[in-house]
Image (tube, rainbow, N blue to C red; front, side):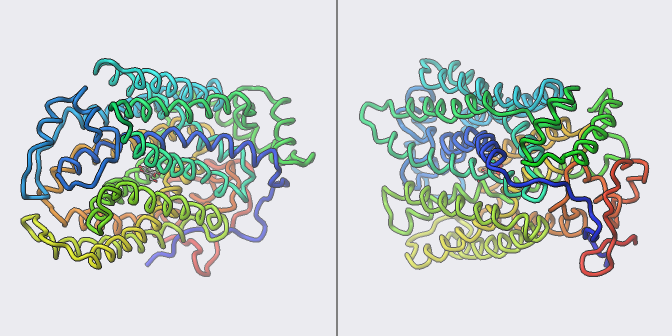
Length: 539
Ligand code: BGC
């Protein structure tokens, strides 16, 4: 068995710098960019809520697409069908139109992240964040005042554009600004904002749905303006990252900014390396075509596989099961609120654990621990649900204790995701790309994430109908696969300066065959191969 990962030798390169209040506040503000994505995930219910609602499981109201007044106004046929009853809980009608409506956001985000790649590279991370905020805000206004379905769709597309821009630029910005020793923690602020956004949106939605007169959905959709304004204003006051300033030729300003960000005067070493990285980057005329070069094989593999696997954990499907289970436990009409509160809080708290541990325990440990935790839970949940719902999908009476056990495993699953694939799915891609392909490669990562979020939302109901409780085993299978992938192919990136990252591939047992010495000319960094523990060696 090959030894995998990389350990850093004693003489590793270290840049002076502190976790200054300036960089901390800057990163907190930028991380708020995750709020718009989270808020939307919470409000739209990712289109799966309607499907569960369609299952007639009577678990209350979650996403805006489950509000009767919203459906009656914009999707009357869906509303009528929703009233029908059926006994098989696994297989019900499926509304492709409605799913398309909610999912159009992901396609728009996918396209926007490609455009954002150019803006981020040529005009800086700030402008992409600002564009994200403005587009999202416009979408929220149009949706809040929607009178016809075209307004809803237009609004949703604008929201998608906003998310595409923000998700492309915010993680990159955070990884560049943070001192490398705290990069993981500061970057995960982005995922923390996503989880806070989901929690707030779910809770607000629950109460807005109760507004008499049926206009609560306007509040839910229009409320997206608040997170949009936060990131819009935030991006105006944020400084540009030194990496981005150098990339755009503003060297003096970049040096001053670097001093301010790091809180020390002696930034020569880091500045020199940033300039070297930028010079290498200047030689690249076609970052997209460049991505296909052999030396970038490890990077492009990660840009595709990490977001793909993040969605194949099944997180969005599992989260949407929550209300069903909570109603079974006996929360009745409050099931949706309880589900949102409990899973939402677990999601937020577990993300904080990740912030605490990511730069101490490393990315690989969290990936592997979280994966094992999710796997166990998925198998237990599949067994429990399978035993009760059986093949025909009719549960009869579900004992309460039974549902409590399932909910417990459910929360353990969510926490496993929230300190592993959730945050790391955004952190790792943003920190491994060299400057010359960083922006383009990050767009690939965002596009893949959006594409599979979309695909899973589209095919979920059909999968549930055919695989039944086995749908959990389907995702469990992928969790096994992704854990092997991490174990063998992802080198540890904790504590390594971002512009020195090339070394981790050069010393990796597998990727070293793609990366030649001259591919990582600068710095050198002094990373050594070690034999003990995780030390890489060629096989
Ligand atoms: C994922 C989303 C998911 C969320 C849950 C994010 O990192 O990209 O698909 O809904 O985490 O917290």
